[in-house]
Image 1: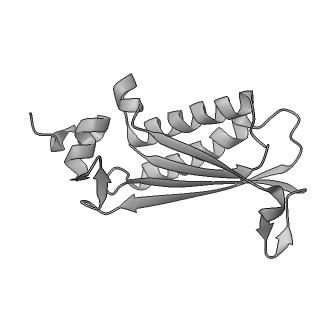
Image 2: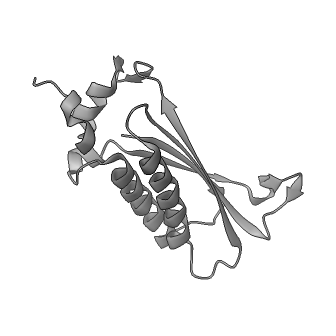
Length: 152
């Protein structure tokens, strides 16, 4: 049940590329977090794509917009959902989501940065209430965390 904030250069993922990116990012999140293939569970994956002016992307003070396609993903999720293996899978799958969604005519080198922000238990508010890991496990259906869910 992540919140994923994506930053890409303006106009780099439009039309079919944007649709593909959103679909692949959702698939990556569901796989890494072990969210079942149920529409109500998958609907809890929030994705926001923010386009940034190409001239705003620098690396070491140098404008890199003509040489590379920089893409960032900031992923917020409850602490305890991921282990070491699933963190590595998440980062790899997010990179692949960007790579596989790039427009065919894109010639720049893809450069991704994926940051996993694991939010401390009891530090996430949902619709005016503080949720803990069992709350998230119930709502998102994390397959590996169902032992935390108590019957209603």
